[in-house]
Amino acid sequence: MQYDEVLKNARKTILNCKACPECNGLACGNTLPGPGSKAPGNGANDNWRAWKAIKLNVDTFVPDADVDTSFSLFGKTFRLPVLSGPIGSMMQYSKEDVTVDFNDAVIQACAEEGIIASFGDGIRGETMEGGFASIARHQYAGVIPILNPIPNDEIRKRIEYLEPSSAFAVSVVVDSAGLGHWKFNDRLRPGSKTVSDLKFLRSCTKKPFLVKGIMTAKAAEQAVEAGADGIIVSNHGGRVLADTPATAEVLPEIVHAVKGQTAIIVDGGIRNGTDLVKALALGADAVLICRPFAVAWFGGGVDGVKAYIEKIREEFSDAMYMVGARRLSDLCPEMIRLP
Ligand SMILES: Cc1cc2nc3c(=O)[nH]c(=O)nc-3n(C[C@H](O)[C@H](O)[C@H](O)COP(=O)(O)O)c2cc1C
Image (cartoon, rainbow, N blue to C red):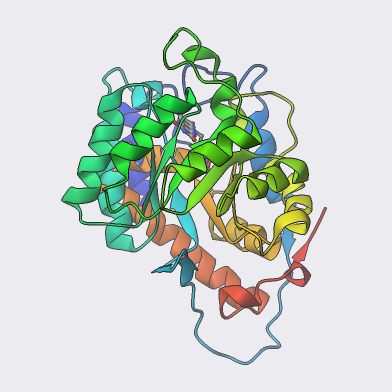
């Protein structure tokens, strides 16, 4: 299935999203509920523009060899350093709640393409249970459930529920404390976490533990202090606070603070293989991509998601070759030009 066809199909069914040729946060702007950014709606576009402002240096004075895009995390090897992003509720894109079907298709597509899938636990238990069932159905361990910052005891119950699954890691998303549309729920009200909260949550699982929603060097150091095996540098795609810096802007200082102590994953406006080269050249170990996976699923189900992953793989391999990188460890700051 061609990616152009995926986009064309998606436009027929998806709500609140124009399935733009490249998802840049402009057409959806300030649509919340919906897939956009918190008012005034610039966050997703700020992220996207920051990657576009970084340029790639062509370097073909290197030995000719095939490009190897394989990537290892917590002892498992994947085909690409890319994670599909969690969407806690697909009601942002649809009148029906299709979240469980979406997660199932993404886990299948990621398993077939050999990349890491994640899924959000949403507010309803069914979403998490559906994710658990999909891991078993597709017999795929390359999955990371990403849990919302509800009260610690409720997160502990969710971690204990997921622990027997073959998911190879678990994550808590701390910046969802800013999700306004969740505040109505007393029992599962999301809120901020301290280092000792995170230490407690880390102790609830034997799996590698990641903290999502890190935007400063200090927060990255605190996550490391709490025992995080990985962090996801993220401003939630501009959905939890307006006027934050773009993730590409804060990544270098976070890399400087914690590189080598924890795995560093970054998200926010990363759309194609050249963005992926830029993120890794800046020191990220991998990237997470969210909104385009929703569009790809509306446009073609499992095949649509696979077409998107294949597009990124080809672009990434091509861009690595042209900046003179033959394996991920070759990617370095000299290969890019900062604005
Ligand atoms: C509709 C929608 C729902 C989301 N739900 C979640 C969620 O449940 N948990 C989470 O950690 N992040 C969630 N996110 C944030 C994304 O995972 C990601 O951090 C953000 O969108 C930035 O990536 P992108 O620019 O590639 O979309 C959501 C984003 C969107 C657009």
